[in-house]
Image 1 (cartoon, rainbow, N blue to C red):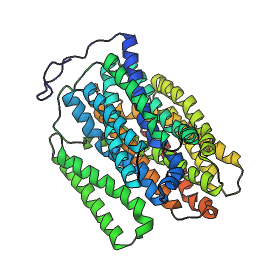
Image 2 (cartoon, one colour; image 1 turned 90 degrees about the horizontal axis):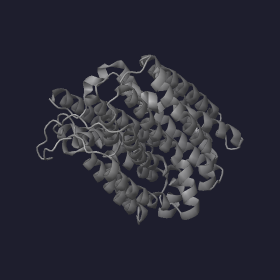
Image 3 (cartoon, one colour; image 1 turned 135 degrees about the vertical axis):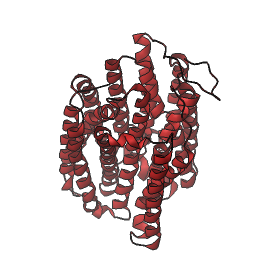
Image 4 (tube, rainbow, N blue to C red; image 1 turned 120 degrees about the horizontal axis):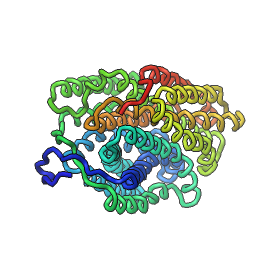
Amino acid sequence: MTTTSPASPAPSAAPPILSARRRWTVLVVCALSMFLVGLDTTIVNVGLPEIGRGLGVGTRALEWVVDAYTVVLAALLIASGALADRFGRRRVFQAGLGVFGVASLACAVAPSLGFLVAARAVQGVGASMLSPVALAIVVNAMPDPRERARAIGVWAAVFGLSMAAGPVAGGGLIAAFGWRSVFWVNGPVVVAALVLVAVFVPESRGERARRLDLPGQALLTAALGLSVGVLIEGPRIGWASPLALAGYALIVVTAAGFVRVELRQSEPLMELGLFRRPPFAMAALGAVAVFVALNVTLLLTTFHLQHARGWTPLAAGTAALPLALGATLCAPWSGALVGRAGPRRPLVLAGGFLTAGGLCMVGLGRDTSVLPILLAYLLIGIGFGFANAPITNTAVGGLPPSRAGVAGAITSTARQVGSAVGIAIAGGLVTGVGPAGLAGASRPGWLLVTACGLFLFAVARASRPTSRA
């Protein structure tokens, strides 16, 4: 551990050798914090109708409650990882927990939609300091390649479980304490995590601190924000309106500018060269596909069950139990499979189950039995559980530990991009649609979920047949 001041960091010495118990305690602490980040990505979904009623707003505006968090999180993940390498991973991790906790309390007392969306954006800033930093801390604490591969599998599995558990936890909290409780609950978890990090997690820094790429960061944020904004606002302003066309042009300009800046930077925000490795590129696209599928599923079923069928948030959240169960049972199994035989087999299983789940919902109608919905939830949950560990392993496999954090940060960014895009697409499908038309309006969304499952077969084909660390 280096003793150099944060203002002028030098390459760190070799990480201290921790006992096996301490190493796995570090993993548990980081996984707890990651569970909180993932939970807040989906826990709000089941409460959107209640939030809309409480604040007097419609479906389109409610999409920003979810995407303000995910867009900011996606945009800042890589920069936060660079800050952690420079100023200390534990220090940035603790700062992220603090920002996340304070923003959660602001969400809980929000008097208006604008205030809530702004607080959710700040929550995303805090969350961005947790995800890539947690992975870097885990990689730094696990010098043995095999142990590191298992730890990465556990880390990815826990994040996946948190996403699946969100609707169930949200439904129960809203039924008992109202929609604001989904934010209040973060407080004690953040306090516990801060104590555990201070006690168990050692400080570490990158071997070589990178400079911040401010032009790249600004262009990435603009490209993501514009893309999601056009998807959300498109149904209202018209897809071919002058405002939408201007949005498309700005997206192209900012995206092209980002690529140009990154290729010219000596220390870019995003190492675009990683995308020349087919396994990495396909893993990043696979992460987008999995999280598009999950978030389309959660939002479409939330509005179908609560608006078309009149279910309560508790009933809608309880209906998602098969999804959480499938992810809970299969995520650890997937991590074990990755550690033993590599990512290909669990990716094939993930693709098969996601595809089957999407097909189950294509014929959904207002009077369809609830059994196909529960079956689809189970299949999609199983697919989601199998997907996360092999995607992370495929992204960082074959890379040295010094680049694992960058690869993990890009993959985490891809997950959040998928979440934001999934919410925007699903919201666009059901915006302004009455209860009788929700099932028909949702059909393109279920075809998209099916396509995302099929894409994972291509990711599996591109992955390495055996794991490498």
